[in-house]
Image (cartoon, rainbow, N blue to C red; front, side, top):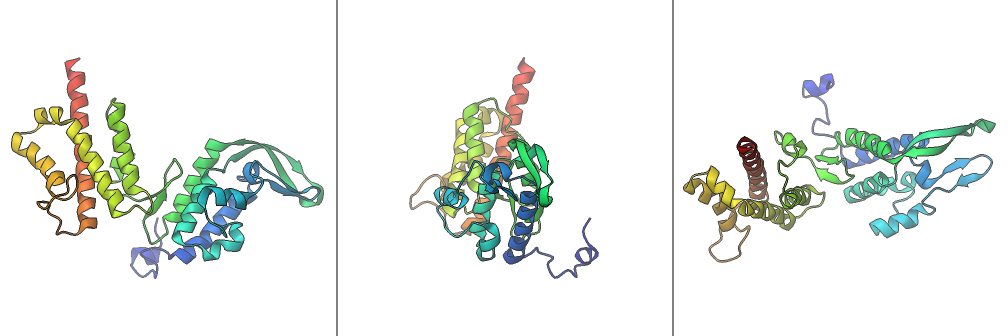
Length: 278
């Protein structure tokens, strides 16, 4: 339930929190997870008797440099205040790869040392991490979320959430992979207009692949209109007849959702017809 000031429109952060505040919250979320042992397997832990006990990743800063190609990101407590949006999302994706839920351990009571975790579950840890990070990102003024596969993606436009959660209704691996790849390309954080244009082109190509089936479902004029959008508006071809005098970002967004929704309808109809024939 939203707070009173949000419901009445009086909250100063109705559109979300700025990056600075989100980074501050991220530091606290990360610290809680670290204190609870979710990074002990990967990064090790501190013991009053043995000082720092190494985990699977002996040098986190080096690992970050090799994976992210950036310096001055680790430790989080030291560098997070200088994080850009790209830095924050890079670190989140990195941590997803190394989080694991502590399952079994031994309590070290001496001098209040605490739990020494010995058994972990990576999948369960990632589920918890995604939940905590998405709760955090829900407060950000820019719409992003962490996928179950650990990638930061743009949130779907309002009303289109279900289409991303629905499975692609096809047993054709080529179709499924092309659609899933196009969706990821479009939604990935930092995607450019060229990335989004390619995503729309990929969806149009899948429809072209299914064109024999599409012809059975649509009248000739409707079928032509379906492919006219991609063929004549600067998506699939490059010539002086292309229509390009429009807001590219807005147009690509419309075309992406149009083709994605169309594919789901067409594939469900094909699947339904095949089951009827059986």
